[in-house]
Amino acid sequence: MRTFDGFWPALITPYTEDDRINVPVLRQLVDYHLAKGVSGFYICGSTGEGPLQNADERILVADTVLDQVAGRIPVIVHVGSAVVNDSVRLAEHAQAAGAAGVSSILPPVVYDARGIVPFFARVAGAAPELPFMPYLYGYAKDAVALMHELEHIPNLAGTKYTAPNMYEMNTIVGFRTEGWTVFSGMDEQAVLGLMYGAAGMIGSTLNFMPGAYREILEAYRSGDSSRALAMQQRANKVTALLIGMGFAGAFRETMCLLGFDCGAPRLPNLPLPTNKRTALQKALVDVDFAAIAAL
Image (cartoon, rainbow, N blue to C red; front, side):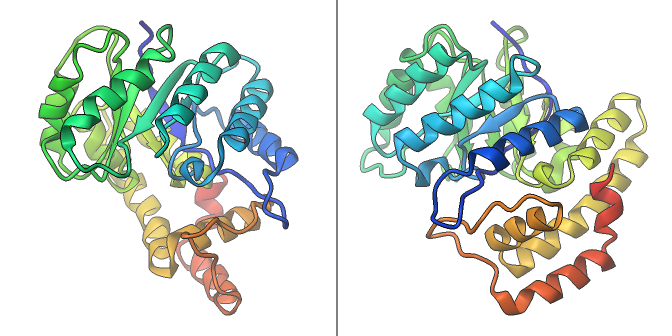
């Protein structure tokens, strides 16, 4: 089973003014990141707003990205949904369309935690030929125990771990030595994730500064932890700025400044208020965003 690594954008999904998938801009985004040398794409996750799209829209995103990538780098398709039959359909499509793996967030409405394992098992079973990676985001309980409960799934291949507990993540890293990938999903802690055994990182801010994470990864792997940490701190200034202004809206406005009109986010995500655009642009200059985005 394939093992993944490297730096992967959790790819944003662009929308048109009438709130449809903006296919031309999506293709442009793929080409932009390929030119930056990204290791792979993670699509239709929380950053890509997959859970806020219907199944047909998500299939369109997957088909567009896979077609534009044309096999040059792997693409993991997030298929998690509140509707398990939609997740099954999306996983089946991902396998047939040529994805390199499938992933799923935890079911969003859970009355009995015992239902999580059969949910994941059914989703993974819909794409048995692909590595399956649960997306551990917002899980307040013992993630290590959950991963042990999922071990019986034949195509379980690791996880995207988006939480601050590096000890917990490192324990999951140690589950297997072959065919196993743990991605760090906390952009602000990418260096720590690597130190605790992550194979790489998947994140939102890789959409607008992928070169920063390439530098972090290369510096860490070459043994220059000081340089990796310095780049992490530079990137974190940009991240903190966007969080402070309302991340979903500021994120899309920042992509627009790079030349990609991604439209407004979908509710419950909120756009950046018009009266904050000038302040965002000025603040991005103050944190030297142009230089870090150019990497």
